Image 1: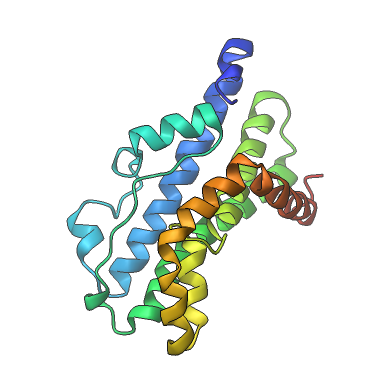
Image 2: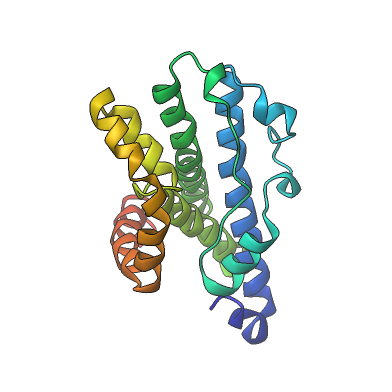
Length: 202
């Protein structure tokens, strides 16, 4: 559990907390920003088009993220009736979150490779890269309520899309099973290791 770092090394716990809060805030902001750009004013009206973490953090989700290793931010709501192409645009809005995490991971990886920082700064920058990769890949798992579910739906023809959306209610149960069995950990670990190699961090 991440909370154990608090007793072993408070500085590490602070670094992990800041990295996670930054990553979640960027992720949710990207959802809100893309929804606004696609014509839906809902996120803007709710004050979500901001980088202020207070607008995006869910208290219970954040607490679980820091103590149990999984959690969530406050979901960004959007109204499909404002979108010109609801199925496609919903996929774009959903993909914007993971995409922002991958982009942030690349930016911080470039900083690490250019500056080659040591000590606390190097450790913090690495954690930002790592947790953005975790959030990016995790949210692309094609199970409701994760972003990947709507991303996949955006590519499906209408006939298959209807069947796909009918599976949404079962997604959370499958996801919990994967998390509790550590299947997600093993699966994501392979993708993260590959990404770290591409970013020249291993």
